[in-house]
Image (cartoon, rainbow, N blue to C red; front, side):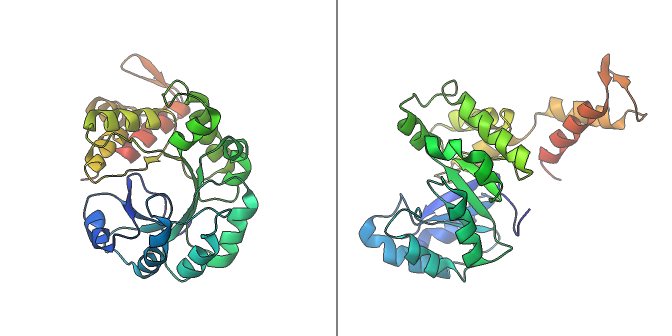
Length: 265
């Protein structure tokens, strides 16, 4: 994985609100995303750009969501963040050439996340995955572009394709989109759990109170942890039985992945 790795609970903060950067870093999120795009009005983008370029929040990795390469602000964003240590999130990603251009500008070592928000973007997901550190899903924009409901059922195929494309390219599991209802912790946790079950490795967050709920959604249950430990403690390299269930290499791999998601300590 490039540089700092890919987060599970990255939290957005508007780029024109630098007083919130430290609060976001202290929220429990495992990364902060300074947003120069949707959260910032056009007249505020210059000051947001300056604040993002100077930001160095302590204790967590930093990402910057720049404006799309088709936008009027992209070139200035890239000039401002070129020397920042932050990873880059490209919204409305649709062409691998855009990611290659960003990589050439910032050099190696910094993650680049391609945010898929359109039908064209999803159609190019397998190619984009070959040039990105990870894919992320802008599910609300995608649903609007396709003219479908923003429901788990309607987005089932899109999420499957992003998980498949990421695995095919050998990159990190994708990051799911936001839960727009800020005050519903149960919904945030359920959305995160659904994303995890679909093969996603993280979820974009828009408010600090969503962090604990999302973390719970991606964490295995006590029953899953107990089962995984029993599987991995079973003797033998071939197929053996644990609790009446036949255990072989694929099952052991699943057990290892469950324990990798378990809270440490």
